[in-house]
Length: 303
Image: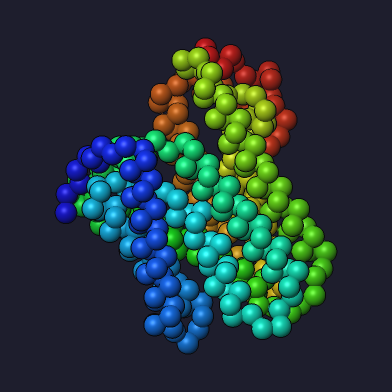
């Protein structure tokens, strides 16, 4: 299979195709759960997740655009949590409501942010374009493994803490309080950072770099919010069943590793190639965790 440039579609038609893809994917996942249940509900959930990913991938191939997968990251976790909820018997209702409610709020907010910024199927993420250029005729196998399935596995693992959070009858503790503050705070931080970046993009001058608001204290405050969200979900699982932390932490740790050592370095390398003065932002501003701005190390954001 060779990759061709994405065909042009109107924005409204593009959203219609994306919606159809996710309706098909969710329906395929539901059929998997209903007719092919495995002995362990976690295995059933992963099988359904795998099938849904394959459905989205089929649309990516059909439309020659791997960005069909972009919204999957935020659409699927609340559904995984809801599936876990169906296996609860005498679990702690308040923890269920907090964890799944915040996960749903995060998913809706992040999906909305994607939709507002997405221009249509004529656009494809620059990282996918790079992979396409490097892999040539092997692009679609690379897309299936790296663009579609790898994040699916990673996010599924990060959702595992929701299993004890949805099914445990352990009473609420102070850890649930910390989890609530961390998770809600993460959603707010990510939302504020995204809105600040969107507002900046509308008025920025050529070559200008954002150095205001949360972006003055972190080069990627939106990513910091995203990471914090997953750590908050982990804390809900830890509060429900501390003994399970050795496997519920796997996905959160993997996402943390990805942001620190893959996603951010890749993005910043590209930024430096396009705007060499971004080196000044690197020198003056914390990478992810918000920290005091080092004004003495910062040149003008447009120099």
